[in-house]
Amino acid sequence: MKKKPAKLAEKKLYVPIVDFLKRQYACDPGHLWWAGCGRDLAFAAGFGKRKPDVVGISRQNRSCEVHLVEAKLLNLRTTAFDDTLAQLDSFNPYADYLWAAFPKSSWDSEENNHAVWMVKLKKRGYGLLLVAESIEQRLQPARNQEVDRDRRKLLLDAMLGEGEKLIALPSLGPEASGAAGRAAARLAEVMAGPVKEVFGRRFKDHKFVVADVYDSATALFTLGDLEQGNLFVQGDPFGWHLQDGRPVVWVWRYDTSLSPSSESAHAKGGLLTTDTYLYAATKDNKNWICRPIADCDRASIRAEGFIEDMCVGRPLAISDRTMAGIKEQLKVLLAWAHKLPK
Image (cartoon, rainbow, N blue to C red):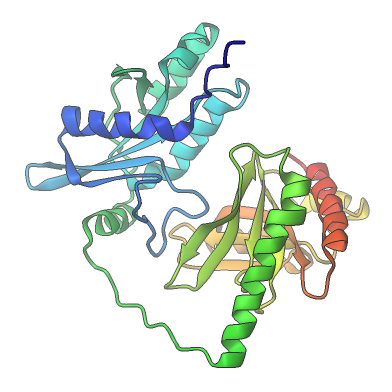
């Protein structure tokens, strides 16, 4: 019996892209970063819930140019390309040049979509790389005219190792350290147990016990990289979102269509429950809110500048709960999230 060909992993695309950026755009080998390279790319007011796949720095005429690449396998025909565009749109403020990258074989098999996809890429000024044994540059990116200087500088500082601040870490007493360790360990057990059992089949390329978002400057730390469409799940071992220290699992939906008029209708249907929260951040991600949605006036929140990463979610407390009870409640939250407007 012939063995089935091994499935291409997304991370297999990164190193050829890195080599291309070094060769074609003179990106500094010492300042190239890609997911899984063994170095972190975390910084205050950083990318938020997701990092890019490849970042390179090219020095031109005493200045630096930032190249940022988002790579996908195109194995989800209906969403993979649009998901790539959405990710690049969210990274747009950070880079001078942005690229989409796909396996050449996957791209070639979608010939009927090429015309529409190329128009979308050209409209945004994004480049296109096709990865096979060598890299084919199908579309040259335009220089980004909407780059945000402050965000770009933060990324450059993180890549070049400049402007690093010393972070003081307090020593915990035996009781506090034991409580923190127990909370983190229990949440890891919950993510690897009930969460994996409930969400595992629904999420692609999911990681249940991995630090997804973290920032030592703001004490942000979440477990679990589970995202599908506009629904995602986070383990919050130290109660960061509500600043209350409670270890919880969050089930979130990106809030794209809820409005004051629609909220009333959904509240009547029992969708916006008393434990439903609204999360939103400022454009620079330096400030954020997480409030009961019943106490939120959407117009006022936007007027205050909280317009980024707007989500609605519900927390599931894991203290004094059995694994079976947690699993049943997660099913309830999953059903609730799917009923929210898309």
